[in-house]
Image (cartoon, rainbow, N blue to C red):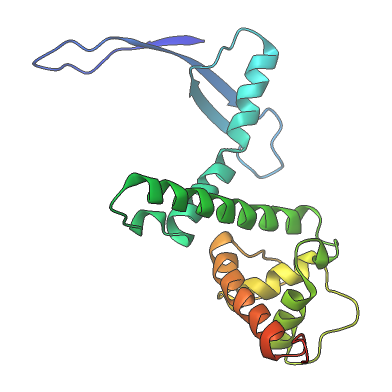
Length: 197
């Protein structure tokens, strides 16, 4: 339904009334022993048809991923602690970190939805082999590990404790990827992947 929100009183001026659309989402058959999900969504998007309402619910379902993305930008990339004298370098910095934050979310999501993919879909041999050797303290296997195994190994370098029933978060993956990058450089510079001259 459409709802008119009355503005708060102000001593020096009159604020305009705001009209917004409100959608109630109610789970009719929750799993046994669970409370039904109930969302009250407030939006400026139209709600005239069932498809429009479904679209609003679909948008809201990805809201948590958006929250995690911005937390990755703020906590992992620390964009709020970057200080520049001019706006252009700041915008360039944010653009680069936005790509990094996206990659971290992508890897987390891909490892959950397609855990059995070969890790070489996202990592070079020097990356996974170096991480494997450090985490397992043995020579890497001939066959690359799965993507899910690799993400857990990398996240363990960032503080994640590998367990069967848990998945690493963006913060441990962010820290682990930095260490994995260093290990890969070492592997290619003076380790088994170094070019002999």
